[in-house]
Each structure stands twice: as structure tokens, then as C-alpha cells.
Image (cartoon, rainbow, N blue to C red):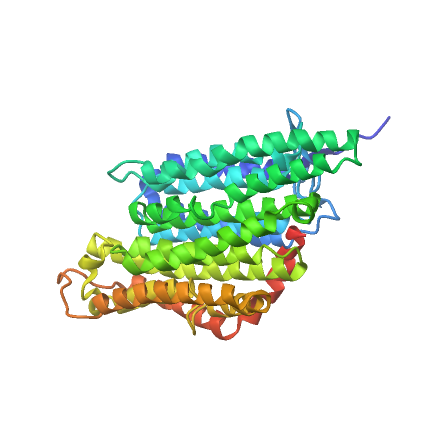
Amino acid sequence: MNPIEPFGIPLIALLFVFFIGAASISFLLRTWARFVALAGASAAVLLAIWIWSLDLSLPIWILPFGINVDLEAPLVLSGYSLQLRVSNTPVLASYLLLAALALALNALHAHDTLFPTQVWMLLTGYSALTLLTNAPTAPIVISPVLFIMLTALSVYVLHGGRRGNLNAGLRLLIPPVLATPLLLVGGWWLEQIPLNPQDLVFTQTAGTLIGLGFLVLLTPFPLHGAWSASSESSSPAAALIVGLFYQLGVLYLAAQALNLYPFIFRQTDWPVWMSALGLLTAIWGGVAAMGTTHSGRLWGYAAIHDWGLILLAMTAPELRSWTLVLFLFALRVISMITSAIGLIALERQVGSLEMQHLRGVGLRMPWSSAAVLLGGLGLVGFPLTAGFAGHWAALQSLAVLDWRLATAILIAAVGAILGFVRLARLMFGVQDAPLTVRESALNIGTALGALILTLIVATSPQLLSAILTRILTAFG
């Protein structure tokens, strides 16, 4: 008599069951928004640590009735295959950590009861995008279709039940909608290459279309407007999670495309396009920051300046280039979270993030105000902020290629710095804040923790090297 074979379950199936279950529970218990957000943040952190430490070379037994869980078994649905690999687990763990941070922010100031549910839904979609390994056509080619669905969901995350229209969020749909036909047609040209591998027209056309598609997905100038607009009209927590999720996803897919199809770099003008648009993005972010009258939009413009520098760092097809990109992105996450902590506290107490309404608020809420300023200045590489080391390294690399590029970035950064100087003068100037504005112990503790983390990273950026080395495996 043959022994009964153990029943195997793909780990990835359990992960998605957990994500969907967490979203459903968050919705059913939405009246306890703070508890749900805090529990979700704790679960996401633990799961991120567990996935980060997984050894995919060994199966893991988790149930006692002869049921084993296969770590690398793919989940196949209608010809689409999702699979955990050494190359994508660091990205999945990063998504979980970002989700945990967003849920923790919502737990501090729970005002949107649907936010935890939406975060888990976004996490499910971006996890599927990261783990997609096989499809009827190349996964890279059909990725904008999934981006369209995820950005459509992001519109509601950004709206968050606030009054007003959805125009800022709807503008997020423009890049994936424009990129989809470019990548689909580029995929058709890819399929023609084996028919006549000696004809360079096929590779050049495919590389041009795919390169343009990813260039649009990366939202450089003039497609950047949705980010600054949503930073003004949406809650800081929603703008934070939507922006970082999208940008991490498109960076990961762009790295996969450049690794799979190196002719995008070698046989097209993609590096030239990226350099020019990245430079324009960084300059516009710095220039626009000088004239804005809304602290949320100022935060958004500083983030656009930082994103332009990241795009410039992508223009060299070298390992060192991706190391710099990831370093800049990690510092971007720290700076944006620090600012978001302060902005959330100020908005809750003052009721508005318009600069004129923040006059004197720094005298009553000094720690939250300092978090806004230090985090925002980190996005433009101000000394003694988290972003300084990354911006300084990027400027040095650019100066080697062309000192004029580095000078233009530096001048644009000065423009953004002037915007934060103006905000600081209003915050810590003549007191005009209502007497009801005060800084709670919770606000002080979270802001102080963020400031300490920022200063630690600013003085010892090498602490991130081990983490970045692991994530670098996912980027080629």
C-alpha cells in the first residue's frame, strides 16, 4: 500500500490569503480604526522580517497533518504565474515595511476608517506586480495594465473621504495609460526579433518603444504634476504610501527591463532622454518650491526634486549606478516619513497646511514643526539631514560627467531650501497660532523618534549598506 503523499501548498498562496483576509478584517472592524491600523502595522512588520529572512532553498513545514508549504512553488492562474524568488523577496519585504509605516501613521491620527483596508489592497496589487514571473506575453510588457488598476485604486486612497474633486488623483492615471500602448507594441516587436536576429531594426524599434514606455511610467517632467497636487489635496499618509508604492514598483520593473533587454541602453537614446528629463524634473521641483504657499505642496515639490536626481542616477548602466539609486530611494523614504509625521500632527491640530495658517505654530508645536523642516530639507540634500549623503554622492558623480549638471541640481536645491526657510520663518515667527493648538506627548514622541533616526542616518549612512546590498540583488 502506497503511503499518502503530503499535500503541498505554495507559500505565495498563503500570503495572498493573508493579505485579502487582512483587508476584509480591516473593513469589518473599521469602526475601531486606530486598533485595526496598529494591529495591521504590527502584522506587516513581522511578516516583512520573516520574508526578509526566508531561506528559499528549503521547504518549511507549518501544519501538523502532513501538509507542507513549498516556498518556491508558483501560483498559476489563467496562464499567469506568481512565484517567490531570491530576486523579488527583498522588494516584497520592502513593500510590507512601507505598508506598516503607513498604517502606523494612520494609527497615530486615525481619521480615515477605510485607509487600512485600502493599504492592504494596494499591498496585494503591488505584491502581485513584484511576484509576476510568467504570463502569456512578457511580464514587463503587460505591467502598465496592472499599474492602471493600481493607480485607479490609488485615486480613492488619495481622496480619503475629503471634500473636493478627484482631479489630483486622476492625473496619476495619465502615465500608465500613455505607457501601455508603447509597451504592448514594443512587446510585439520583441517577438519579431528571433525571426530575423541580424536585423537591428527590430531591436532598435523594440528598445525605443519599451524605453519610452518606462520613461513615461517614471513620471518625469512634465508628467510629474500629480505628485505635488496630491501632496496638497490629500492626507500626508495617503500621499506618502501611494507615491512610494508606485515609485518602488516602477524602479523595480525598470531594472528588470534594462537587465532583460540591454539594447535599450546600447542601441537607443534612452540614457539621453532620461538625463534631460531627470534634470528638468529636479530643476522644476526646486524652482516651484520657492513660490508655493502650501506646506504640503512644498513637501511634494521637494520630493519631485529628489525624484529627478534619482532619474539622473539611473542613466549609467552600471552596478554603481543602481547602488546610488537605491541609496537615494532609501534616504527618500526616511525623509518623507519624517516630514509626514510632522505634517499629520500639524494638520490635525491646525486644520490646514496653508502656510499662512501655520504662522507661529512652531512655538507651540516645535517638535512636529522640526520634523516637517528636517524631513523636507532631507529631500533636497541639506547638510545634517538624512538625504545629504546621497545627494552629495550623486552630485560628485554628476560633476565627473559634467560639472554643469551638478551646478544646475545644486542651484535648484537652493531654491527648494529657500522655500523651507520661508516656512521656518512663518512657523517660528510672531505667534499667531490658536491657543487650542498644542503638541501631545504622542506627537512629541513620534516626531522625536523620527528626528533621531534622521540624525543617525545623516551621521552614519553606512548603517544602510547591508540592507541595500541585499535589495541590490533584486535590481540586477
